Amino acid sequence: MSYNSKVLLIYTGGTIGMNRNPLTGALEPFDFEHLLQKVPELHQFDTQIETYQFAPPIDSSDMSPQRWTDLSHVIADHYDQYDGFVVLHGTDTMAFTASALSYMLENLTKPVIFTGSQLPIGQLRTDGKENLITSIEMAAAKDEEGHAMVPEVGIYFNSHLLRGNRTTKQSAEEFNAFESFNYPHLAETGVNITYHRHRMLKPDYSKPMIPHFHLDNNVIIFSLFPGIREDLIRHIIRTPNLRAIVMRTFGSGNAPQSPWLLDALKEGTSSGKVIVNISQCMQGAVEMRRYDCGYHLQEVGVVSGYDSTVESAVTKLMFLQSQYDDPKMVRDMMNRSIRGEISIPNS
Ligand code: ASP
Image (tube, rainbow, N blue to C red; front, side, top):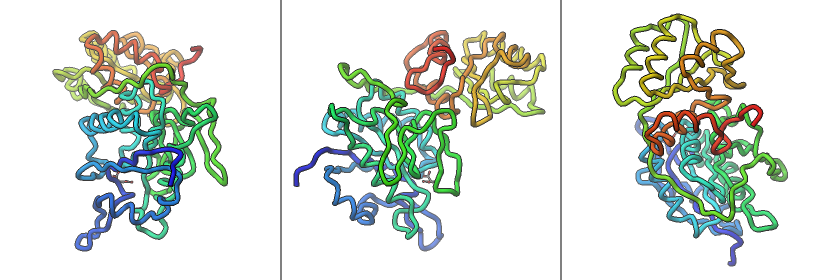
């Protein structure tokens, strides 16, 4: 059989490949062969599918920056031999991994499509088959010029292709597990697949893809809430080695006006910590100038996270910290969209 394209299917674990343990009744990761046997449809593709398995496959709750580095290596090592990549991954941390990989694979010209499922692929009502089959189709798809239809890191789930670093897991129950609240879908599937190419990133085809393998995870996420304690915040701010904080604020980026909070944040930013303001709302952006209580945050050196997801902000910080020692550079890059992860007004 002659094939039109070649896709590498990478299995990291997750529900899609899990089996029920007969003793405990709990779902456990299973090996790849088992998963492939459940999808004989894969043989009908005019795409050559080769596979790579992470050993052992994991529940994505155990995902880590080391695994992201491993994944970046696998894609970089096989980049020239394949037209696209599909990564099977648990849904729980898929948005973090897709965000991290979007930063680690600079000037990506080929699709890296993450997918998984809410029900194991062996189960009768599984959502895994459609997710897997369509992801492979998207990873193989090319335009008239031979360029990939999706030259970026995406998450395909339940008929939508979403930008990876714009996506959040929104449901632990519904098949519609993911949404990109602040960016429209990249593609939709029904009877046909509709690609919205004007929404996709435009890589420079004259330049190579540049893989990155380092991350610096000296970063923490915390949420503000009425009643938050000064001693606990000061403790975090004074943590040695901590380089950045993703601070989840109210509404359009607002925080209590307590003088101690502003003072503690100022202590953090003056000592070189990058503090990024991300809203607790799923939809909308941080606008620190809109209310007085947001304005003060800007005055003490807090950086806007614009309309970023938390997953994207924390992995972008890990990536930038591995690239720059100087917090000024990290701050500066947080104010720029480097992989389509934020919408900056008037830019
Ligand atoms: N706990 C599983 C995981 O993230 C859930 C899933 O795959 O949907 O690996």
